[in-house]
Amino acid sequence: MTAKQLRAFCLEQNAVVEDFPFTPEVSVFKVAGKMFALTDLASTPLKVSLKCDPDEAVRLRAEHPAIVPGWHLSKRHWNTVTVGELPARMVRELIEDSYDLVVAGLPKAERLRLDRS
Image (cartoon, rainbow, N blue to C red):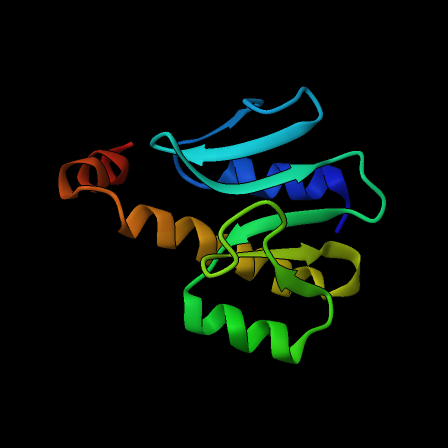
């Protein structure tokens, strides 16, 4: 998966916006104002930090050397993924899981609003 493909896939999720709250180089992808992915799209190797269920995060780290605790994030809830070292399908699934986890944590009214958009 290329940086362009990663960015496009994140933006394909419902009601997602790209923001740059930290530096102009770090893309932060948000749904309803909540971050679900962040990456420096120009970095080599390409890495993306994604929200993850804490138990699943531990399992993924144990099974895949390309998945490590989130860099500068809560190590319990975030993983940093080296994109090129995993199949693109798996990276897409991890992005979807992160998005879904953030949406599930939103208030019901906000989730309903997202379903209508």
